Length: 121
Image 1: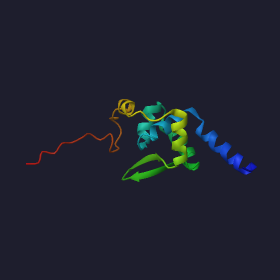
Image 2 (image 1 turned 180 degrees about the vertical axis):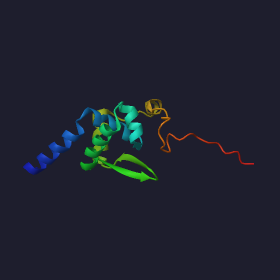
Image 3 (image 1 turned 90 degrees about the horizontal axis):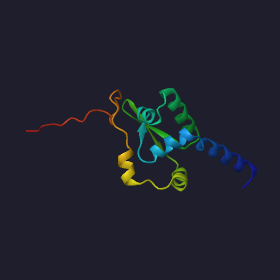
Image 4 (image 1 turned 120 degrees about the vertical axis):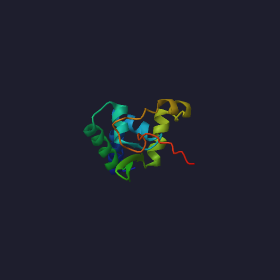
């Protein structure tokens, strides 16, 4: 590996090593999330969360997928997913279900929208 590759790897590890970005990535490895969910999870304001997402997106770690008015973020680099599993451990499905946060009343994304039951006759 030449010096340029070490520099690039070092820069990527610096992006991944931030505690709040690790929390974001830990959430995103379970399922795509929108900013409102990440705000609730981190207890941080939207500009802060958006800044962290921008850094991860610029590093090629995550991508954003627009669905109507909403943007959902997901991990797009399989090497990062494998690294997260190695560093944080495999996702425990039982804990995953328990740790998902509740719907956020102020959020208008499809995940938070109230479930409506249709009564087809």
